[in-house]
Length: 215
Image 1 (cartoon, rainbow, N blue to C red):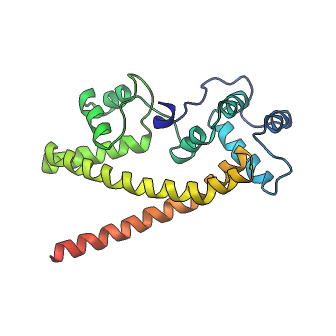
Image 2: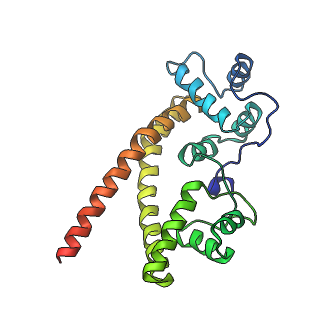
Image 3: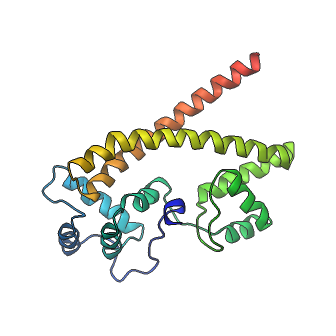
């Protein structure tokens, strides 16, 4: 569940958000942060961002000891912001819960446990667009479209993950880079590559619309 829907940061923090020098010492002692690395400043920046999202030093160290902190924190970088449960989204959208859950599955995502927060505001906005489409063409065609989009984007995401893990994460693991360094590298990719890829997909999508329309 954590891997599929993202780590849920603590809602209550013992200290004020931010990474103190003492926190950095603890993170360095745990091997999570490398103050001697050339990208130490970028590592500190990503730690500040994770702290602002609710991750505590203890949580980061605990996940690191379990073997892989990259994926949960990566999730928070890719899909930032608060999470809502399907029940909450259904109530706010005035839709039956079954419809909201069906949309989630149609997009190709696994069913979360009841009440688990996994919907972002962007997800809710996409749901609103799908609802508008259903009003125009009917629910069956709208769900067919959503299923097609989910399958296509899943394949694109698989290619992106394979590329980034082989060209970014694998070399960093080989040279035993810290988890914070890996996350800093991922943050750069997410913030520069994802918007560019979204633009590429929009451009190619428009080209295919025109070509298929001409046929």
